[in-house]
Length: 399
Image (tube, rainbow, N blue to C red; front, side, top):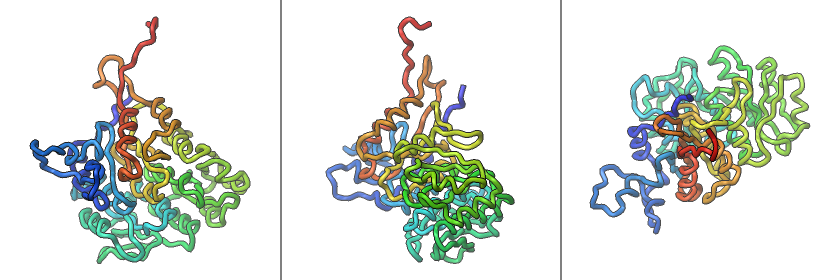
């Protein structure tokens, strides 16, 4: 029997609800659930006790919502959820700092979540640090990463300086050069280049976004291409891996055969993904090729749900959720209110079931990313129902 998926602990849930963040505060609204920040110590004599505690918007029995209004807040919440205390054994040695206005740099940084760097992403805004970021850095009490030369902060394409902390910089003149530089930096930290790379569109973030979750889990580098032309820096980065497997994420309408033809001789080329952003995220979640891929075709998994139209940096902000806890892929939703048919079918395929006792079953769990404007409570409830373990009904006449 498959090992049971880990359920987020009550302590983690309480911490996350208590820190969920700028953009989630109380506002004037007829929908108290959508506008209330979770509170601690709610009394039984309060009419809205359940909503004030955060239910069902911030959590249901199978989902937890990270309800930041932007990637900056989401990243700060996620890093505190993944690293909930200041104990040396459980906190990162360094963080990666990226400009919140640069979705490509954010996706590139996702691979640094993997050991030996283990550096989750936080965000600057231009040359300044938002309070959410400074608060998260302060709480982490960073010691400095040996793999990064003792740096406490790895700055990728940003000049923002986090106080007196030791920094190291990774630069590039454009997204292609920056991806090459980050790839070289991580290869040096690990002592060798890997044997796989992920090639994504530099022009269509909705197709590229699911790569962040997998890069965070695997450490495989994300490299960029244009639709028809693979830039020189990307080709040079691939060559440094000495004939890796090149996983092309997205359909030929996004990364064309003209582009993949230019990869001939650089390594084995394998295309994965689907024809639209929703199916692209689903097919990438299903995909496996040897040691590569999520391979989610059965029950018992974590998942991370994102709005297709959200700021693409959000995918990188929440990538640490895919590299710890109930590891799972990033899945896109096109509507704030309705579960896409393709997504509903995917969740039905992997919905857990039990014959006699649900305690002996496996479970699906999900993080829901964004406020109620991008993923409504109704849609969250639909996801919750689709994740729930259900009785297996034997077919009539079956033995």
